Length: 203
Image 1 (cartoon, rainbow, N blue to C red):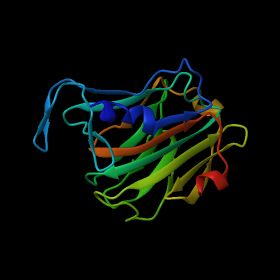
Image 2 (image 1 turned 120 degrees about the vertical axis):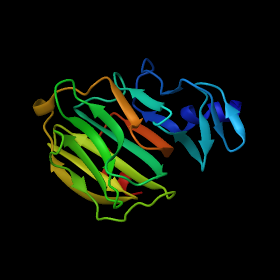
Image 3 (image 1 turned 60 degrees about the vertical axis):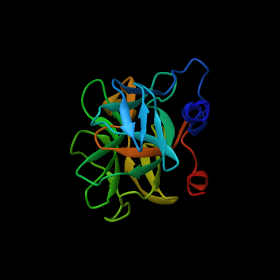
């Protein structure tokens, strides 16, 4: 159990984040049986090298955004193993206080997209079949108000850039839902308060 409980600290890392930032939170209101073992309420389950999150139970894995992420600039790096493919799977979702959202999402065809806009607004997307069930993909989500752009990197490749202006949507909401609506395994999670360089994100 000690090894398991260290996962969120080890794999949900941060750069430039102040010490008063809130901790990642996993929750599940009930016990869960998984692969021959019964897990008490609110006890994480680890499999395939990461944290299993199944919103149907419901299980949640959230990050408080105050002192962690801000709308001026930053980078989120995440590793995900989808356990299903469906339209539309939401990851790293932050709802704005007014309307719209910050969102990494995956389609039933395996297309990976990133958007900071209204629902149905502009996004950056890969081709189809980039991700598959039970296979990991990595994504880096970068935004920079000064540079007026946000970018998506998938599996170390730069996919594209879109226009970004913090003044359009304002500040982020207070919480990020890392796995929002379909089961997945989170293998990596890193936050930075700076917009990391192409060289760093292509490594």
